Length: 479
Image (tube, rainbow, N blue to C red):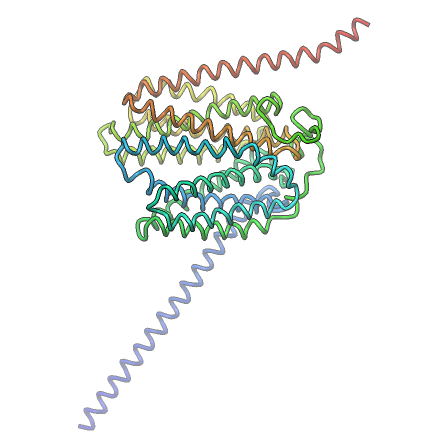
């Protein structure tokens, strides 16, 4: 018996020893995994910072602004996923069409009312821009928290969503207006804007994937709560912006300083609100061209989104819609990649090239209608609209002085939103025809007309400028 008891004790002791060894191995593995994860996170962070800080952007503080915009884009993607799952995609096609029309109409209202005030208010706040950006992020985070408690109530949910939309545009206006203050001499505005949007788009796509996972596991309310956390983290990043965001550039003109106004003169006292007729002919031309392509992008997205649910081309509607969304995402990524590589100081050339490409692709897709043609149009529309937006922002930042730049960007953002909404509404209505060839032919015809009108206006403007430069020479010869 004693021997048996001792044997039992030995076995128990051996089992405890083995358990302890296993625990130590497991603990060591966990610590090693944690260190590896932390090292990978730090490595990713260093890589991202090197990417955003390239070409002198880290020296001037532009890298921080780019990272802030990326974090903001990730937060916006959580809101988009939550709204898409709550408002639009849980109903039939006809019900969804009505909800989309209502949503598009109502989204135009905040800008029609608030646009005359957002830009001038930002122009008056030349100091404290970092706190203004942080404030828009804090407000968006609080609205996300409120939306999470009203997921099942559209009457409460949509006003909060509209508030987030307005704050997004206010942030975009403020960000665009301070970008020239942080621009290093090594890169152009087109490159800086493209780099910022490319990284923001990548972050938004990653955030959208995470949001979709959260939505599948925990539901829409937790997507919005997670979005609140992202917005609050971005707010802390906004507070790290350098002092230069509150200091207008010393240069009076040129790409890195901006001109005093659209006409090269200081604005009159009290002149804050900009209209399309008062931003100068170059900026007005850029805004008009960008609005045409923005309307085309909105038209194409909503037209195809509804058409592909009824015309499957031998594949399921989920596959067709997923392929369309992939084409839109690819078009955005390619546009930002191309823009970040371009060092062109003639953004008008980029814009008119896109105006020429868009109707040509739309016409070809109408002629060779099919799923591949639909995806080509989806890719092209967002590619052209994104590159045009980069070009327009660069023109505004170059041509408009710092003291009225926010007002001008407010006009730009309002025009972009209204053009996108108008194009989307037309796309939803044309989708009721159920004819892809007719829908794309309509788009191609509208784009061709807009291209001719814009070329004609540009030609008249250039001829008028040429005539004005010749008049002094004629007067000297007459003397």
